[in-house]
Image (cartoon, rainbow, N blue to C red):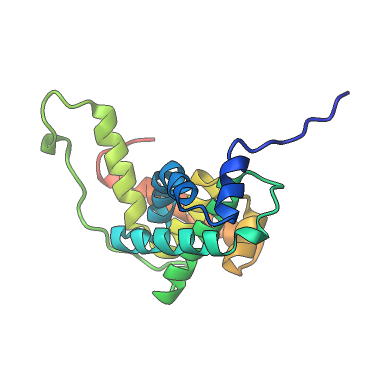
Length: 190
């Protein structure tokens, strides 16, 4: 069986960045900024903070490009920086994992009648779910986002957040339960 060697399509661009090529940096930013912003926004839950994280992450990535070894895609390496900086942003806000039994009051979300008659119900449902995720307590939202949306396993999440793997699993379970409650309150059923 022939071994498959991973080749990052951005390798030549990354090499140009290592040499200080500003156009290459601008191209890397153009290729990755939207996805990285969205990853940060899902974790921080705040547009302005996600923008700040994005800028800090790209500056850090370009400054630390010598540490990128190419054993994963550049995008994966960059996403790890974005996620770490997003989590640090939350820590600066005093991220607290929510204890058992603590309630979180949620603001009322959109109603189907808020949308134009010709709007697709799928868009309404997606918007409700997005809003419900943003209403989750920080600890719940971070674990849920890292596990479901970013694809990390509980061992990786534990390492990133400095918690145990069992805490990650329980936070994820509570986040799912709370998300279902919030969605149900807004008329969504599983």
